[in-house]
Amino acid sequence: MAKRKRLTPAQPSYLSAAPESKSALGAPLATASAAPPSPIAPIAQVASDAAAQAALSELSAVLEKARADGRLIERIGLEQIDEAHLVRDRLEQDEDEMAALMASLRARGQQIPIEVVQLEDRPDGKTHGLISGWRRLSALKRLYAETSEPELATIKALVIQPASARDAYVAMVEENEIRVNLSHYERARIAVRALREGVYPNQKMALQGLFANATRAKRSKVGSFVALVEALDAVLMFPVAINEKLGLALVREITRDSGFTDQLISHLRAGRRDTPVGELRILSAAVSEAEKAALTRQSEPENVEPLAAGPRIREPLPAKDERINTQLAPGLRLGYTPGQHRIELSGAAVDERLIQELRHWLSQR
Image 1 (cartoon, one colour):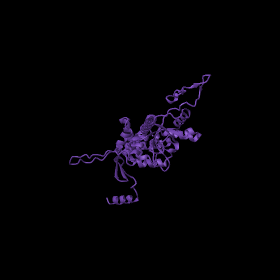
Image 2 (image 1 turned 45 degrees about the horizontal axis):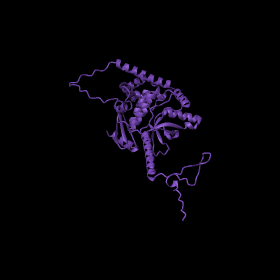
Image 3 (image 1 turned 30 degrees about the vertical axis):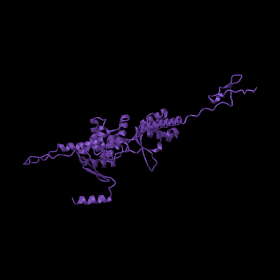
Image 4 (image 1 turned 60 degrees about the horizontal axis):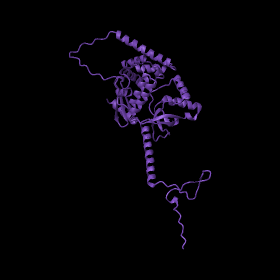
C-alpha cells in the first residue's frame, strides 16, 4: 500500500503578520518569518505632502499679511535704521527724560516697538527708515555705546508700509503727540518742513492733515507759530524755550511791521545767547521795544486826508496766514506767503542761469 504524503498548513505570514513568539520568560523573540511593515500607499504620501505645502503657504501668507499691516514685530540692527528718513519734529531732547527712559530700558527691556519703513537700494547700507520712536532708538543707541551688550545692538520694530508721505508724517506726529507733547514751535516747524517737501499743497492742508485730532484752537496757535518758524528758524538757537505768550507776541510784531524781523535778527546775531535765558531776554526786549514804538505812533496825530468825491471801494486783501505752494515746472517749486512779503523758489532747477534770468526780468519791469 502506497504511503501518503503528509501536508503541512499554509504559512500564516502569507496572509497576515505572524504572531510574536515568546520566550519562556514572556519576552518576544525575533523570528526570521516576521513580516516587514507595510509601506504607505503613494496616494496617501502625495496627499500628506500637499497638505503640508498648503499649511506652509497659508502660514507664509499670514506672516506677510501681518508684516504688511504692521503687526509683526521684528528685530533690526541699530546701524541699519536711518533716523533722518523723515524730517524730525523734535528739535531737542530733555536729558532727565532720556535718562529715565534709558533706566527703564536697562531694567525692563524695550516694551513698545518703534515704527520703520523698508528701504531699498541704499548706498549707505541702511535697510529701514525711522517713522516713529526716535527717543527709544536714541536711548538704545546710547546704552549700546556704553555697554556694548549684544542684546542692545538690535531694536524691536514694526515694519509698516505708509500709503503716502503724508501718512508717514502723520504717524510720526501722532506718536509724539500721544507720548510726549511737543512745543508749538516744533509743531509749526514740522508743518513748514512738510509743506516745503511738497507733502501738502498749502499751509491749511498741512495743519489739518498733521494735527487732525487737535482742537481748532490748538491748530490756530500752531498756524500762528508758522510765521515765527519761517522768519527766525535759521537764527534761533533755543526755539523750544519760547513759550506761547512770547511766541504769539513775536508773531504779532512780525506780521505788523515788515522791518521787525530784520532788526530782531540783527539783535540776535549781535547779542550773547549761549543759554536759553539769554536768547529769551533778547526776544522779550525786542517785543517790548516794538510795542512801545507802536504806542508812540498811535498817540501822534495823524494827517487827515480830504474825502474823495466818489465812493471808496474796498479792495480785497490777501490772506496773510495762507501760504501758497505750487509746482511751476519740473524741479521748480514756488512758495509765497502774502503776509510775509516773501517769495521762495526751490528745487533742482534753481541754478545760476535761473538767477541771471530772474535778475534780467526784474530789471526790465
